[in-house]
Image (cartoon, rainbow, N blue to C red):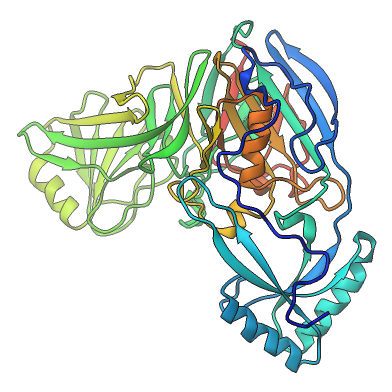
Amino acid sequence: MSRRTLVVGLAMATTITGLTVPGAAAEQATVKFPSSNFPLGARSAPTKTMTSVTSGIDLYDVKAGSSTDGYTVTVLLPNGRDAGTREAAETTLAAVEAAGEVAGIQRLERPQVADAPAQELFMVRVGLWSFKQRAKADKAAAKLKKAGLKVKVDYLGDDGLKTTGPWHVKVLTVDARTFRGSYAASLGTSVAKRETVSSMAKRGGAVAAVNGGFFNIHTAKQLRGEPVGASVVAGRLLSEAVPGRSAIVLRGRTARITELTTTITAVSQDGAKHPIAGVNRAAAADELVLYTEEYGAKTPAVDGTDVVIDANGRVEAVRTPGAAVPKGKRVLHGGGEAAMWLNEHLWEGWTVKVDTKVRDLRKNRNLQLTPDLHVVSGGVGLVRNGRTAITARRDGHDSVNMILRRHPRTLVGTTRNGSLIVATIDGRKPGITVGANFVEAAQFMRWLGATQAINLDGGGSTAMVVKGKVVNQPSDGGERAVGDALLVLPR
């Protein structure tokens, strides 16, 4: 084999848009597990067992596919990534050859999605070993590292290219016709802190639960429970929307998927107005941020101003930042220009209205923030009106790692009659379960009958809890503390 040809046995990805799944369950009028073959890999008949959880709720344990993937060594490109331009791959290939090793350049294509074109990329890889030869792959990687190259051992099932699996999936179906409970969101003990799904499910009295959306890992460690996107719990907006990002709106026993924006404005009694940039998160320079008692942390200890307001909007105190939010109160915090506005327009004893609007972009109207309203923000839209519609760029996940590579996934969908489908696809377990990429996740949810579907947080966060027990196999080896959860309540 030429040193500049593709590594033998490594298949290429294909572009998939608007995919029609043969025999798709999207035509079903009710939530019913499909009788057609598993939609991924060789499309073989899956093995499944069903457990009735309670009236209207069933849990399926599904297995499909077989393990045929092996290992290779990927040499990182000059930018530190495993895939990039052909020029970068050629440069890296030359470095491998200079070290006396034989490598190949592999072309791959990140699939086209609804809001981003396909992208041609190239990787440099050394060797190909069977599943049982992992030790040989590790030895080759160690030799390359000793030569000064940055490398990693890759299991080919994680690539997102052609695979036979296997897959291990949990599917929870909630039938709108017979379910008599309700849905809710939970942020655990506070917005700032993370908590396991099982803990939130126990506290909320949930019969079933899954992890919610992504949480902010790019903020201070003590604040990393903060959801990245809209969060509403019992009618209270606890985290602002990322404009236009997918979310699931829960009210009573109804669930619908849409996109949201939020607009929050402080209106002083003298008529002055100022936009509130965020809710329960770290504040940037000149931002006005609202903190509620659910925050669970102190306001930023920076130069600026805190204004404490009671439930009626009366200003109780103007204070130095860096203290907790008093129980039953809210705090408007501002630095720079926002602090100047607070000092000029919110005097002690004055009143202020916090005008909060959460807009449903599909219905083009505001949601009523009543106590039965809950919102869990998603990460990426997958299915819209029965067709694959992956909104990776809009939802902030336009990358090879997120679109093409396989990871554990937590997925939520609704059927034509309003039933709910929740699924966890376990991954990162070579030989046991490979996970899914976004295209495969969309295919899978359509196969289950979802006409609308979104991706929630995944990876080590993926967890499904039923009757107090974690029923899937989290890739970290145990439950990870997460930002929020979607709860299925018995009443």
